[in-house]
Image 1 (cartoon, chains in turn red, yellow):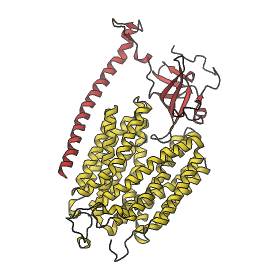
Image 2 (cartoon, chains in turn green, red):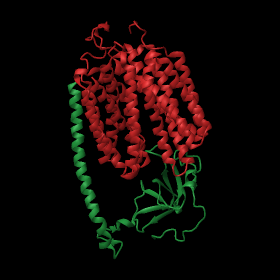
Image 3 (cartoon, one colour):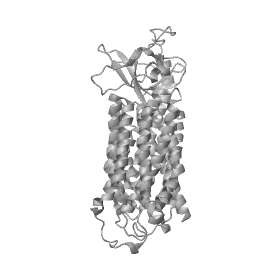
Length: 173
Length: 400
């Protein structure tokens, strides 16, 4: 009994120590991010792509989007799902985003590929928001995206019309 | 004694909370922190494999140690640590380690609680006690699904794992309520006179050749093969068919059967002690093919919640009867939790295969075909119970 118990408690102690160190780390990173984020656009606003000596370009944080795991909102602001993959065409252009849609606590989610042109990258008041020009009803019934089925064509949900009511598809660029 | 039994109630309640965060939800969390689908699949597979591999060793460990409360406490602490690790360090190695630690700890915790229950009440009152365990487990599951769904939605996915870790503290407190004085110092059987073989002789693997144990493991495995994929496929259909309330309908599909389980589990335990195990076992199994056929025929999301209520009946029957039947079979062998581990391995194997196989059928032939095949498997499982599974309730006066 006792060796096993000791083993358990040792591993626990190590994990707890590790956890503590990481909490501290996360806090520090969080603080740095919090300080940098508001400052960055102000400092580097004049030349959006200030180049340093070593071919580094700096961009304000709210001009670039993280894609994997990024939430996609509907036009009404509802949570539609998360981007889990991006499909590119042969020219290297993004063609479709795969979003993980619906479910509760991870049960019942569906992966759906939607046309890249249906995404709007918003730089408005709510910064860093990716919105979707499709309503829920169209999306939910779409065939599921499966990357394992290599021989079948991939169904991609497109916008109903090329330019329905949104005159400017990409207000940011 | 009353205090110890109340402690056991609460222990079941809080332990149920542990499983919720570690379920399919972890893939939502990892997606949110930018993991690729391949990496998520790898980490979850590590957890699944560890969960299977650890079943039998976990059972052996609990049979071997004298301090079952200490084993349960260590398992709870390990699960808390892995929840913290997941919340604070979502990188591949820590997540894989956390999944594996959680799997091993769960394989110790479940058998440890079963062994504590048996030690507290003895074989005579075990059915009723396991009914209570299943009730509190179900209430805990429903509570956790609601609480963690709310946390995940309003605060963020990381909070779910911090909450999971925090809920280990009341679980440990509940464990402390179980007093050593109420636990007989002898191993499993509270009646030393009934023990023909001396306690000091080490248990052997002979119980493995018991036909009843093998029959039950096969039945339970087949049951899970037919059962495990039903909820995920049904939930996928709800997402496809329901409107913006789809998530709430799925939540209802998860919580509603727990309410049924909570309501009827004590009755299941009493009936199993009165009529015997077989009638209840057959009932719990027979509901499964009916559920599969109803899912195949009905696509209305709200009716699907009603069909899911049948799952509560099956879950109550299996939740109470699995530890009860295994206790019947391993009486006087000192191998109770090892045998539980063997059955747990069979159940885990069935469940893993179920989601994979039914997922393939659903992709190629549609969800109706998947439900019908699951119903057919459920029917096979029911027939297997009626053909191969004898009554294990000891006849009055009969030994072993």
